[in-house]
Each structure stands twice: as structure tokens, then as C-alpha cells.
Length: 330
Length: 250
Image: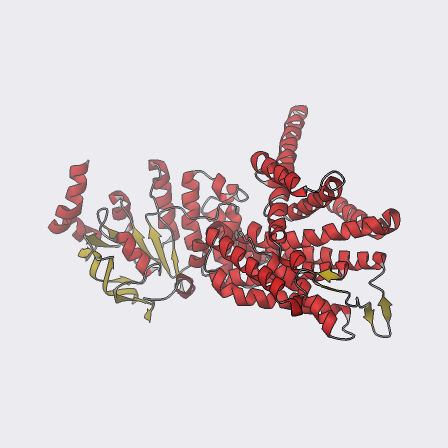
């Protein structure tokens, strides 16, 4: 793609974000924030599944812990500003990941997935039972949402849905591009190599467990950001919102449907399921049935997900285009 | 000077003796072949030297350092590179990216999360030079899994050499190649290992005798003989154990 088109697209994207809440109103601004949070959450999961080759059934551990970290900090620390509250959320998720990493980076495949299922359920039960800390089923809410401010310079009220929309979008889009960049660094190359052939990476002189552990913690940190923004957005977090089995599986489904190991895949997945939920709930409460049917359809007919499917079409089209160009030049 | 020394190495798999008191040295600048019939223990020996297995007893010294129980990545960083008998490339990465990884490793660019890897011009230039030298530059942007078998084997060997190791360990580099491909691979290996130290396991006798400066013959986990190709060819024990057996097979 040439530079001009690229810049035009960037400008169009930026303009869309700026005008979106004014054109569509608060309801659809919130709707998009909800989707964007899950796009970030699914993308953090994609770092593991798509780039490191690790399937986890417990990624909500980090999403939920990020959310609880921020919520508890805002509840218990008076006058805590916004950014430190988010940092505490990220930090909580990272600490949890650092504790688990030494165990899980030495296993792969089914064992990795099942260990995460176990840890994830453990976190769920703990959040349910430790009621005096987490609020159990009811959760904790009603904590203050601090403004985004630099003392004496400016202060933006985060309870204003338009301002929060801008803030959330900046954090989420920024995070998405950080992750994209990470894959393009030398470290990212090693990670992708581990996905394809960990043994060879070892024989190329890279330390496999350390690299995996680092990526694991990074992935947890981004899931923590998603959780943290989620809890600021909802002003409520309960054991069910944080660690329920559906929260563990959402990113798996989103990434598979959107396209594993692509930048755009998890975003597409989050958009598809976000829009679906909105539409389907008009007709039925059994959203899961629709999710299931779509997942089956995608796995059978588009094993590379929607992003892979679109890519195949693009390649076919360009092949046809090149053929006709050949003919016309001949 | 000896770059590699193997001393009294013994190994068994659950009581089954695979190697018994293996002792040999590899001199710097020499192409050293390890031959022997199937099941002689060649690959096991190879895997112990490169760090895949830890032996029951004995020691491996590389550049005078004891590497008997070192991890593969550490041995590699000391300057030993290896290829695999069963092609072991990065499927979904392009040829260029496959070769770039060992080059990055040699340059010590391992945990860098601040630079765009495509903008490391020095690395890019070097990888492109290597690809040109081994005739893979026409497939620069092809994913490894789309390559023909022969080309994938070439890539495998190129990756072992791209780290510019002081000692190159090649595990049956021509295994499964057609006659033409073998010819090409052998000339390539000869050219690329010129003046370097290499240990090569090989089945194909023509390859071994056209290539090696020194040969160690392994049979039932014991060293039968070590010497230059002429002596080995003339050695009656070796003939009985290996060369004769081969002739009988064919």
C-alpha cells in the first residue's frame, strides 16, 4: 500500500473517532467502548495464541485481576488519581502473571490450556468466596471515577461519556499499536519462532522459557489494561464479570473467529460478537447458541478466521487482476 | 589445537547401552566425519555433544570448556551451530526470516523490544548476502513450508551456518535428497565450510570420502577407528563392520 493511501486512512480513522460520539450519541459511544475493550482483551490473548502458540483457557485471570486491582485501589485509597489507578490494575495483573509464569512456561499444548482452566476457576471461586474483599457475586461498585487531570493544568471529567470515550479509545488504540510493534521487534521475531519451532530457537541461542515468560507477562499486562478500562467504564466488577468461564472463553472465540495471529483478527472478532450481542438480545436471551453456531461455521469454512478469509479473497483478486494486466500488456 | 574433545563418554537408554567409552578429538580447521551403520549411536553422540541429552558418564569439552551438562542455547552461544537430520525450519516464517534469527542471535540482539527488526539494515544486508551465497535469494519471501524438500534442506544447513559458528555440526545434511540435490548440497557445504571446523554425520559414503579430512567409525556404540579417509578405507575391521555390510546390502 502506498504512503498516501495509508495516511488518508489514518486521518479518516482519527476523524471517525473524533466525530463518532457527536454523531451517534452517548449510547453508541458506550457501545463502541465496550467493543474496543474486548478488542484489546482479545488482542492481548492473541499475543499468546496467535504469536507464541499458547492456548489458554484462563486469560480472564489477568483481565479480572486488572479490573479488581483498579476497583479496589479506587475504593480504598482516597483521592487516587486516574492514571495511578490504572497502573495499579496493570501491575496486579502482571504480578499474578509473574507468579504463574515459572510454572506454565515449561508446559505447552493441552497441559498449558488445562492448567489455565484450573487457575482460572480457582480465581473465580476465590473471588466468589472472599466476599469481604471482592464483594462476591454482587461485586464492588460505586467507587469514585477520578478525572483525568494534571493538577493546575487541566482536568477532564471521566464521568462524561464523550470524554471517557476519547480517553478509552486513546488507551486502547495505543495499546493495540504497542502490541503490533512488539511483534515486529527482534524479540517478537523470537516469539514467532518459538511458535513455529521452539527447539530450533533453543539451538539458535535464544532462551525459550525466558522469552515465553516475558511475553506471558506482557500479554497479562495488556489484558490488565483492558480490565482496568472495563471497570472504569462499568463502575462495577463482580466475580462473574471478572472470572466467569465465559470471560475466559470470549477471547478464545473472538480470536478464532476474527483470525489467529493477525493484528486485525481479534478486533474483527470483538466487533462481530459485540454487534451480534446487541442484535441477538432483541430476539432471545440465548446468545450463546448463536455464538456456538458461528464458531462452528467459521471453524469449518474459514479455518484461518475472518481475517484469513479476507486475505485469501484479496490474494485471489490480485492474482486475477495481475493475469488480466498481463493479457492487456501482451 | 583441539576445538572439541569427547572423553570416556557412555550413554544408555533405560539400560540399553548406546555408547561405550567414546573418546575422540576434533582439531581446529578440520572436517571430521562420523560414520557407522544404522543404530551405531551416531545421532545419540551428536545429540549429547550439542546438549540435547546429558550422558550417563564422561565429558564433552568445547574450546576447553566443559559443556557436558550445558543447555543447547548456551552451547550455541559459545560458538557451536548445528543442523538437524529431520528438517527443522520455521514453517510460517519466510526464508529471509528463518536465516535472520540465527544472525540476530550471533549479534547478541536477543531481548530487544525497542527496534523495528525490519529496520536493522546491517542485519538485513548480511542475511541477504548469505541468501545470495547459497542461492536461496530467489525464494527470499517464501514461507519455509512452501519450499521444495531440497531447498528446505539447504535452508536448514544455511541456518546452522548463518550464526557463523566456530564449530559446525551437521546431522546427515543430505538425508532424503535426490542425487542432484545431494551433489549440489555437498558442493555447497564444501564451499561454506572451507577452512572451518565441521563435524558431520553422514550415511552416504561418496559424500563422506569426498568431504572429510578425518573420519571416526562408530559401530555398536564403540569407536572402531579414527583416521584419515585412506586409512579408514584400508582398515579391515571397518571394512568388515561397515563397508562390507553396505556392499552386501546392495
